[in-house]
Image (cartoon, rainbow, N blue to C red; front, side, top):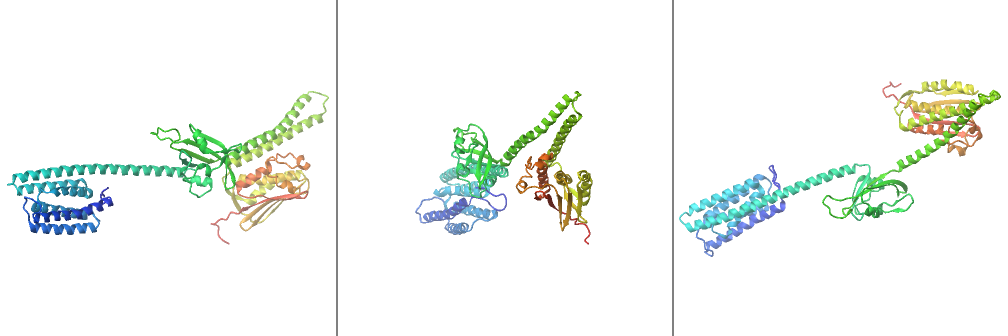
Length: 548
């Protein structure tokens, strides 16, 4: 039972009903006892006032019915009711029965009711009123020593019993309040923990000792791609795990073997038709005061989707392996040519052409390595997002700079280098480095694989879009090869491709750059007729520019 601190009382509704029912029953009992006194069916030496008896009984009965039918709404309301009961009790004991009667203990009910509704202060006031009634009754019967003794004993017994009952009730009330406070604090702590757990990116769940799920967070539903209730289900039925040897991995059986925190990063599961690589960490739960065997209190499990991480690790390992292999050949050739050159340079019988040939071979391999390092550097910048910052780029200016940079190389091969651009190209918002290197790769590829004819850079504006294209009249790409040209270190088996010193990284890098720019590369090509690489970007629209 809890009492409110404001004007509105706050108490246990069941207790309130019992007290109000007792407040109706006791006046009936006291009225019945008064009738027995009236007709001399019960002996009592106290003076009996018939008018006071009937007046008090009728008023008491009316008050009892009223308070039983009308629930308490305010603290003032309950105070007035209790005051009325006390006044009626005073009149009843003074003028009807005195203290020498079997229902004297009914005052304890008033103690209890006053404490429930008004607290310790109300209890003390009720006891003070009881004491004053006793003193007044004794003074009214001061000539009867025997009655005074009996009244004093009745007073003392009732007061002591009532005080003890009130104190015990107060102590129980404190215990209940402390229990309620502890429960509220426990609920608050639990809510805080659940809030933290539910905001974790990793799936976290706890099971009982048999692997039946008890608690789980929202990330579990995301990982398992379900909205179904997981509580009460066995973890092995909702998550079918397999190890690297494709053997079934049953979590419950491994739970029982665990003696500490266990971690597995070589497990996988099929979720919504897709194979997902999982990191699984589990540990037995053991409360601080538990004397049971490890795992008796259940287990906590943390699940993490590491599919992307594993794929990146495997891709990295493969990339390092391939790069090492690709670097080995030019380094070996360069090292061998330079070693031969070192041996031949002091011999007079070696023709100069042989020396020049070895120098050229070494130089070509160094250039090859330089191009590969440049491609790897570009790829690294794109992967790390070094140049992700965007800016407003004047498209016409960038295209003309590109033309001025590569026109001499095209002319050196006897190729025509053309520009075909729309007027008023405007600007785009993008990374200058990514866009420039993407166009440069297209142009250098076109120059490399075109033996005769022309290369044309085409930039056209259509509404809010700008299309960039690099067209050549080179060797072209067969349909079967077009599916692989953007793969890393892939080179066509076409002998004309093999004649060039490509690294196999150029178009792979362009795909990465295009992804960073948020564009898709379109390829149209026909063997022996040339190729066209193109992509489209959104033109920048200046919202503050005056409308035409």
